[in-house]
Image (cartoon, rainbow, N blue to C red; front, side):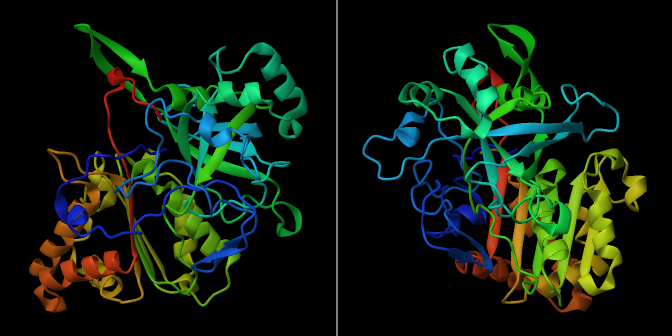
Length: 419
């Protein structure tokens, strides 16, 4: 789950941002098939912006107190865009040191979209927008009872929509492949998996230290199997997934691996080869929190996939050949040779998912670029210069082959929405 970055004003990304660099979120419509890098979806979310379109480095999230009723309101709309109701199937901790999702650092939440307009239509790189309906002013007991009884068939009233328009919302990354999970005969079974990184911070309020839980992340991991989950249209194509024939380099940290899970499962589980070269490097605090490592290693073992997977652990560097961070890993000659081959390929796409820049600290994307430039300088045998690396990033950005989203660490004492 990622937050909104609204203050990226420094760094090469800010300097070289171009219109259309990241597409704004969309709502469901009955638009014609839309194709992006080989992915298509009918009756999907490609016409009406969910949130005010803003070109930012980072994910889209509604501003605090955003009037969601403006989205849900059917008045004056030829085709209204009400929220949907999914059912929670299962919640599993991804933290080996804590089995309780309500206490775990990160969890996998499986929800069933059967009967909703999103059934079988999720796209790699999307985030599902979930509404917190625990507040009685947002959803009273009669509404919750009717919603639980009728599920996705429930018809929202104007009053429901007005109340839901005041709900807190959070965006959770879909880790399932194109169209969701598969059942018998390889057909979509309606289920999708979300990765939720639970947020809890120690803050100072009125001079007193206290622990504050992020309302949305803790709300969703506190659900039980069978509970109804109200969701709005997904945030779409912040990352546009590569096809099997698209060379790609992925860099990330921790739970930001979620969109890569979706994209690479789509590539290796659903698409036919031959596959283009793919490189994935992820940094974790420790080996026990290597999310989906088994899946990535399975893909890497198949030589026909042309897939390189690397994981490093900042607090257990002895388990990753003494390397603690991705920024260190990519300066090794063997790794640099693989990465430079991709970065300099005019058809390759570059993906960076992690923390974004602040006024005092460069973001993960800037750090990756600087590390690669240092690597070029250090590994002169490869005959690649730092200037070539920076030029390749600038060119990829201009051609919309560079994709970045990030998580902004914000103080929960400020009541930040989306956590």
